[in-house]
Length: 304
Image (cartoon, rainbow, N blue to C red; front, top):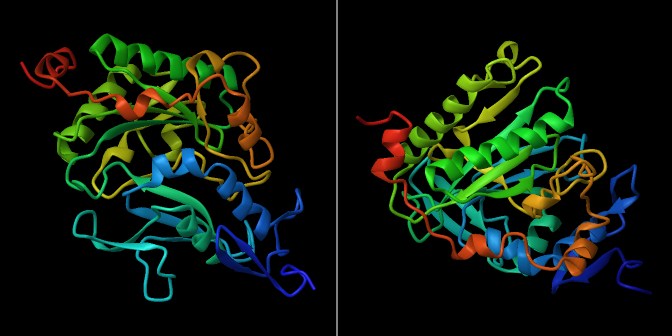
């Protein structure tokens, strides 16, 4: 009898129980298939997860069947998952996944989504990235969301900052700015707020920085609050617990054109996409180190 037939499978050295349990009904995607997806993108995924506290979306029976968001972990989590004692952002003991064994162990625990801090355990008080989550109302056409990402990139370029792009795995896009680890959370949040508000002022009929639903009708919410202490953003290459098993996927900026679709990247095609790319869209991200300078702050009106 096969391991799967016996009620278990081994993936990345981790015993997966109930491997044939269907997690995504519309795809027939099983628990084992989800684990194998994460194994297939391990190099790129781990570059994003390594040394970062994680918040987890656990869906033991699949999306829509009692999913819940978990920050702190306990002794029931396997040893492959490292523990990180965090005193910031509410504190607690967080998971860190520094190996593919740890990621697959999380899948075994019913985890689908992996959300990362914007700082690493090297210095949790100083983020090494700044995120702009462009979250559109359902009435906003996709072309406007793509234009918003390019607009955000240009605004950052005007300030002297290079940015990188990924899908959110939902209906939006993330524009991410790598930073040197020298600015504290409050400084990064205030800077990102000023950038978002400068974009809102130009087109208040299209953009908003207000979270309330009544303010987001027919607008794109520029969520800069991802840069608050303790906040997280879905990791690049994480699956989302949504219909079709979409994946938050890094893109080259020139891929953001008319044929790009918000749900075009999913468990079924991301590994194949990586194999066919001319280069990793985020290769330069990991060697880019940028500061938020006084000149930038003056340009945004943060200082005189």
